[in-house]
Length: 304
Length: 268
Image (cartoon, chains in turn green, brown):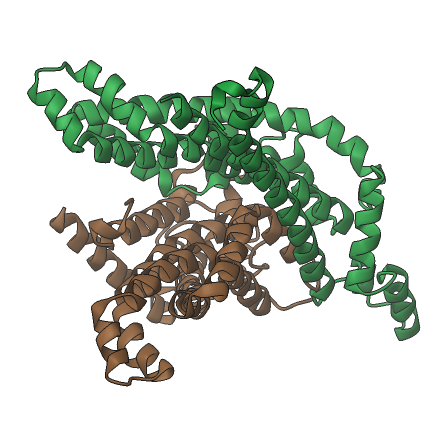
């Protein structure tokens, strides 16, 4: 049937269908990862030899009976599958449980801490992307020039510093800790962006544009960047995951009250409920970021 | 670049030798306390001074290097072997196994593995020995760090499966197991070596992060992460410069691992 015989609404809907299908696939992927990640996290923790062991057990004055009573009190209320299903049902009702170490509902803790982490990650990613992409662009424009050499050396040096040490250095210099996230993601963004842009700059159509006398800026903006854009978008999704991983040491050491610090406190306090909830939350956020980056690619392709 | 690579390899060889000769290089045990001289400055007796418990910092650095540099490659080997089995089998067999393994790998890669790592690390027994805590920490790194390598190995195994060489071997009647061991495995060796080499600095850095957060190797056994924890509470200008020795050694080692890798295997 020719397209013009359909109503405009139907045509618009049909055009949107591939995008909607991809959206559906991405959401199903998030849901699957959430279920698998939750099950994996719960199973790993429940099978860990220290599960159900409390610090009180280190008290040498306790008798064997007291230790057994303590273990019984801290042991789970069933097998892995049962406790996981119970947690899922509670989660479906909006109940994320109560933190055993902080004695507060996890939902309230997340509502309080998550905006702080979003701020930390947002500022860190802005710094990382601004520095990484602009230096990568400069490096590709002037190959083997001083900017390329200096930026490559800086990125390589930063890549060798653990995230926690970077956070400690920021604390020692009394600099804003949020910027540490930027410096942690910067080298990865710079290296990948530079390689992607350099590869795109060697494509035949770019060489033709250069041969025809197009200026460096025009070649970069009109011919190199559009080719590298889908992969740069994918890199943007991955950088969210990198920033979340960096948030744990940065927030814990720079005393930023976000979910990274909460995860560290939960790990130190052996708080299973909070740790599994946090892992699942961060999984969902990173998957959504990756999914959004993936969805943006065909949309761009459609425009072209 | 070649000179830098040779220098990096020489540095790593020297460090590996130092790890083997720890007992002769360190002038004291890592746990020995010099109670008369806590927090001492560097001297002829204590080259990097002593910590707040009076332990010789140089001896702790040497033993910490040994712990990190012996266990990180062991964890990398475990992760690479896991990746080789999972990725290699998926790429070689193909079909539903490949799809299943790749979906699982994608999902595993989506998990924030530092969160997962601290979750699992937090639930280990409280009364394990320091040696067991070191083995557990690096063991966990090995068990959780296979997924990225598995993807690369699967792609290479798939390429080999469809190569003319394997097609010829099949046509000559070569069976599955023989095909895998005689034709696929030897050709996967370079990529396995590259993945192994890439994983070592990653695991060294992850252990350092865990150690600084107090979730790494237990005291009194030193590791780079545990030694870097001493920097907590210092200010940039008041800190004693010798306290940065573990950081300098860590950065030099990780850079050497990056430099020693042939360029094509790096940030491709």
